[in-house]
Image (cartoon, rainbow, N blue to C red; front, side, top):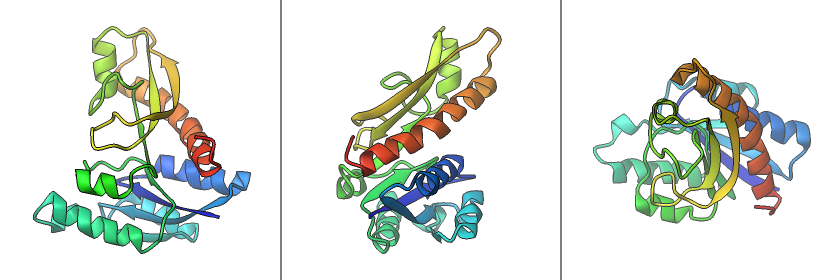
Length: 190
């Protein structure tokens, strides 16, 4: 049975989708912990209600990224994960942290990578005149939003879309795609 730890920063809707799919589909895995860099993150309450261990490692309590990364790694390692899943975790992680979990850390990014790494992806796709946008599940590497891809899903950019309407449609695809990709990794298919 593979052990999954999920990192969040907010409401954790992708985390919820993964937890629910894991339970409903009987994956050979278990979400053993949800950790947030924000103690007030709404997703922690969802995890607690579902009997999943939670922890908060507040990035504001550390003088440097390296100190935060070390404390976060200690919290993660306490749960002995086979797979680390970033689900709306809004902190850039240092190279040493990424190397520690190399090959077993996933992220979902709200664009069709390699297009639009970083922030404001939906606005940037619309401003660039793209006809489609989407999301990408990838392994995390030290280069932001550039790791090997596991899966992608596309949605059309519709006339009249703004970044909020496009983000809402992409999020629907994220909730479908991310659990499928995590399951494929857990089962050794990706």
